Amino acid sequence: MIDTTKPGAAATALLRHLAAGVCLTADQMTEALGITRAQAMNAARKLLRRGYLEKMAAGCFQLSEAGKAAASSGITITSGPKGKTGVIATRRQTFRERAWLAMRIHHRFTIGQIVASAARDGERNARENARKYLAQLGQAGFVKELPNRLPGTSMGSNGFKRWVLIRNTGPRAPVYRAELQTVHDFNTGEDIPCKPR
Image 1 (spheres, one colour):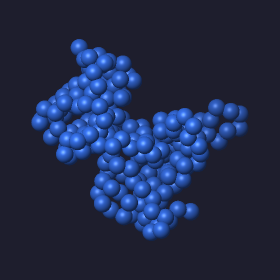
Image 2 (image 1 turned 90 degrees about the vertical axis):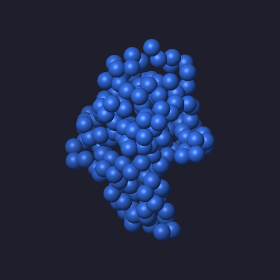
Image 3 (image 1 turned 135 degrees about the vertical axis):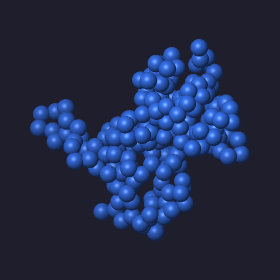
């Protein structure tokens, strides 16, 4: 039985469970660990922030190479992301960093889903920020617009554009550099040319 009141307990349990090499959906994580879906997704987010988890095309989560190493070393997840030194890192607060995490979790998504996952109360222009960020990431080859839209809810609606994350390089959000017209990927150190329309 997992003590879900203890910070990081569910994430640690998920890390241990995935060490067997399995790839689990959110529902399978819920069943395997005996926790709620919300607790399972929160645990997955903690592992994703550390670069320990990756979402596969089939919609399931499995450990990255870093995650396998962490599991074999027997580490315990506590609250907040940790860097290589083991010191708790400063929690990222920007909308685009939260949006990138949401993209990695959803894999396929609409702008509305990203805004719902990443925006905080009182945050202005989140939808427009997400639209611009997706355009920049699309020009740099991180995301791609899908041909089929999600059906709309109102009469005469064209539906909602859907996107897919095709270049998931790691937990740190790529950043658009307007002066260089590039997207910098902190995970790989690359600068990818990007000229948003």
